[in-house]
Image (cartoon, rainbow, N blue to C red; front, side):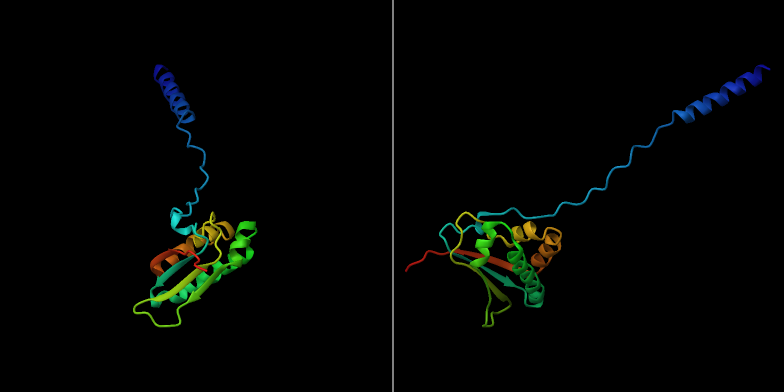
Length: 156
């Protein structure tokens, strides 16, 4: 009889231990990775009122760069912010007609430029086409050899 009581007590202890077993934590909502955007440097500001961004692109990646250019043009057309609409009026994009050794050259010209506005194309894409900015950034990063900036001062 004594063995039976200990058996029941041991069984209750096991059931109780099961009832107080560690409860798994509540499910955590999946975390979507943040878009990796480079910091917006002052190099995308043209405080003189006009400027150029010159992109040197790997020739084999020129089609990718031009695809991104199409999305930039679309973002400029879709932009709702008054400042972006004003920028769109004077944001010209050119491709070099002359061959350049080891690069396709694209020029963004801003004249007049809004002196307090960023002309960073990735920032524009992030504002207007946020779901696409990361893959477009990756294409740009893979295509661009270097970017040169030139603030311009009108002479006459």
